[in-house]
Length: 267
Image (cartoon, rainbow, N blue to C red; front, side, top):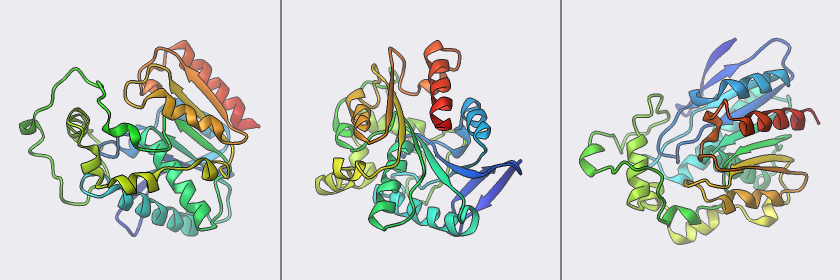
């Protein structure tokens, strides 16, 4: 059963649940904090999570440059606390994040640690990262050159929570091609360091399943690989696949990965 959830901040969520569920899985989508939607959760993951009797909460979060990255993280923390009080309550919960949503998941866990709040039982990270150093490097993520006139109709001012049709994708490509993500996220060099998740904080994280592709052109593999340092974690590399390889549903490596994730969740 799917249920729409409205939070006081203006964010929305989708709850996928069954009467037999015994815990919650919160999902954070990808999109470089510029575009994307809570509705992009792959059916293969829905099946795995439902087998583990998770009620799945797919959540909106604020998008840049309409909001700064600091505002995105803080509002996500506030939204989680509201969900904890009103929906999750005393039930066990875990997080799953994909790309930028993986970083957001990790940043949220960091804030829970700093504020001495209850932590998720498990984290599931698909090609996320622990710091933002790479966003200023030149990356060839698209052969398509985006020009300013192609993005001029995109609203960059009004608070935006969701991009269900991926209409802001060109804005993201433009930001990467012109190295504007730091401006879009509204962060300084000092803030970038503060927004990193240190090894000391990672050492306090719950068990984590992480994966990334060795040939990732969007998030360099070495950034994802740092998550191997989380205690009781499992890191699984895949080879010669694109950044968002969850879309490669027929690939044998991806099928094997899904099987390994399912086994890990049963532990």
